[in-house]
Image 1 (cartoon, rainbow, N blue to C red):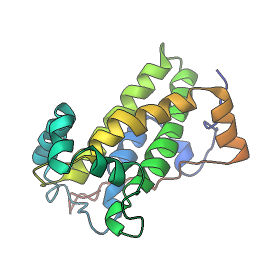
Image 2: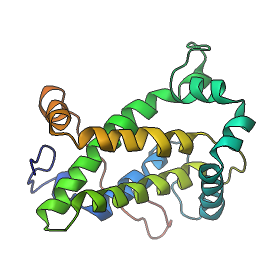
Image 3: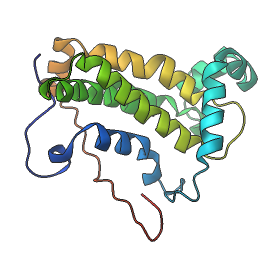
Image 4: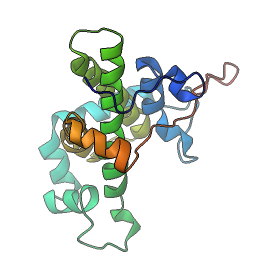
Length: 197
């Protein structure tokens, strides 16, 4: 296997890159925004989990309740309805964070599992990525109950297409050499007295 993103480093986040750090960074990435709590006591994991599962299991009903396929496409894929309306900006992180970003991290994770001698490194990487992505959707959903098309777009299109894209060496080479896509998360830390990350 050709390695394009996994580099041997003795400092920074690359030095501690592994499945655990990837799941923590991907899963709690949204908590870097001031709009989301970073305290475990304020994150409603149970509601976030069950609401995310419901929306993923019933994508047709969720999209219909959300306004139909046209509204779903305008929010999640391309803002053809009203590009100047901030409500139609969800497509931007879908392409940058999920398609390009998580696709790249999946390749890097595959390289890590390969280097460590795991059988089926791509499957291990996909499992790791799905765990981090599901945790992210759970934390992002928090206490909201109802229709949410964001996990539908991410899980059924952007994440799988990103993983597939980066599985091809020419794509991985392009995004590691011609246009450099990197994964520079913070170093996750648990603040014990606040039970926060």
